[in-house]
Image 1 (cartoon, rainbow, N blue to C red):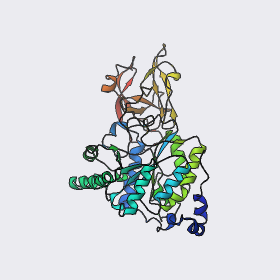
Image 2: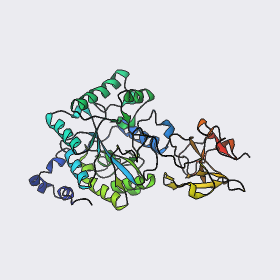
Image 3: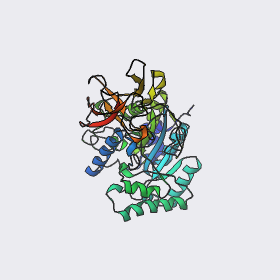
Image 4: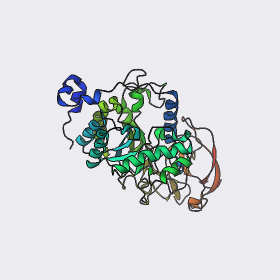
Amino acid sequence: MRSTLWFPLCAAFGMACMTIGCSSAFDDEESPEATQDEIEAWNSAYEENASGKADSAGCSGVIVPDRNGFNKRIALTFDDGPSLANTQTVAEILEAHGTVGTFFVNGKNIKTQEHKALLKRLKAKGHIIANHTHTHVNMAQASAATVTSEIERTHSLLKELDLKPRFFRFPYGASTCATADKVRSYGYAVTGWHIDSADWCFASSTGGVGTCSPSTFKHVPNEFRSDIAGFVLSQAQAKGGGVLLFHDIHTYTVSKLDTILSRLEQNGFKFVPLSDTSTFPLLNGSAPKPSAWVGTPCTDDSQCNFTASGSSGFCWTYDDSNLGFCSLECNGYCPDKSGTAPTFCTSVDGGQTGQCVSKASEANHQCSDLPGTDPVSAQRFVGTSTASAATALVCLPSP
């Protein structure tokens, strides 16, 4: 049960806040308009994440290797601080909801002893402090020397403060195989996200604060253009939970955070630390428990008890003995799961709908692990998605 929160009252009555110590959350100027490069980077990150391809997680700064099985659990993360104006208020909101967050900080913002003391207080309260580079540079476009410097400078600062950093997030999720390898050489877990709040867009001056313009971020459905809480909830429901991305430098984010968390709680979601190994085993270096997935042999739907991308698993049978494999409905793309064969969206009902199938790969011994199937060339089911036409060698009953 969360405690009563004074922050929304302060948000509504800013002058009154000055007398009770919460005015600092509103001292900053409104967030500046995003640059064109930033807009392109954020849109690209969303599209990369939407592909759901866990097989690319090794080089990606966006894709988290844990792609499903969250059971309505969410880890709250905040980038770009610390902010003396906002970060402490965010921590108080999280405390009121009985949870902690992960703060991915930029070293350049750790300017004074007050900033350092703030980070130590967060750590003492159970929050996780993590590395988000020194100056928030696009690491996919930086030189090798710059990449090393961006990691090292913030890493050294956090180590000096005994904050024991374990997680790293690339600005804009922009990474390459080389930059991801460099980050991991420091012992970090590269940490993307599943749910993008797009708070940077809602906080932008474009179109007015609180409205995310289509010209800035095209992936917000029109019904949520002025409803950040609804946008976050819609993604959480589609993905079943996961890692949620915010930025604690935006006063708008702080003003809406309690509302967003309350909406999530009202819809059955719970909050966990990023270090929760039962929710994010692969991110935390643990092996996940074996579970059914696309391509798992089955004879009935009860053996495909999983959900992903807003769809429930089912058993697609293809012979008189009810021999089959687990599948998901799809539209252009299918999610992948680390340790299993990559997936592909095709149609097994004559093009009426899309179903996820396994690609022929070493993980399923070129389909021999799926009785009654062989490698067969199949066309992608594009449906109403923006996916490009494609073909793949997949495991299906021989024609």
